[in-house]
Image (cartoon, rainbow, N blue to C red):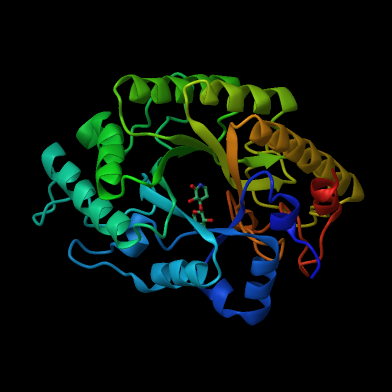
Length: 337
Ligand code: XIL
């Protein structure tokens, strides 16, 4: 059979993809996934809102479907995620009378949640994004002023790792975040990771989400970030890779009538060069023992979360395969080495 990404990279790292359960029941899509990838991340269904919508009710079906598919086909699974400020269930931060919960209550709820989810998939999920995006967007601030932080202060982060480790001591536990290659953010993520390591919190790894673009990061930024985090004794993975053809932040408005959203040959070439550079760095860092996995955030340009984020109405083309699942120039540059 023809080779896929997972075969080209078999001596380097597993190559994963974020999926929804419906991708795995569609015969064409699931065959494509099995050809290219050997690791899965649930794109949404394991997040706390979807999987734990009421205090005494878990929705296991969609999540089980992904884990069962992975078991049947010998794929790895990265669990995503246990503690995040988005996609939280309505009940989480409030008491029955509508008042805000105490720190003790919230940590108890977090403990119950992590215990239930991690134990259910013990031995089947090898790595967990335990805490996602806890650093503030404002470079002047350190931790994000989320409801977690407002109620618990910084302690929820260390506690989440302790709960996850107690539930499955074998699981590789990650802190996961975006824009980690921007020097100011890298410093703040490093500071958090160092605090956790110094306090002997059971953290094993750091996830660079990898929501990158034609314009960033640079090769130096990427290598520096991986090497700096690895110097703390942590594994590094790229957990949500895509390469937006639009600049992040510089263009957060919707396409205006008459405005072009053409995916030009220049964009395609620049994207291929970016992807080629990234994977060269990944191979080097894997050989040096620092990088242990790369996961794409969606399968092909047929569907990307970036089509509707940060604004709807402008198609993006951030992946290695086009809307018809045909390999793009970027794919060829990634597998040619
Ligand atoms: C995104 C999903 O892809 C979307 O379908 C959903 O509407 C919002 O979340 N960082 C993360 C992921 O850690 O969980 C996010 O996934 C993308 C950004």
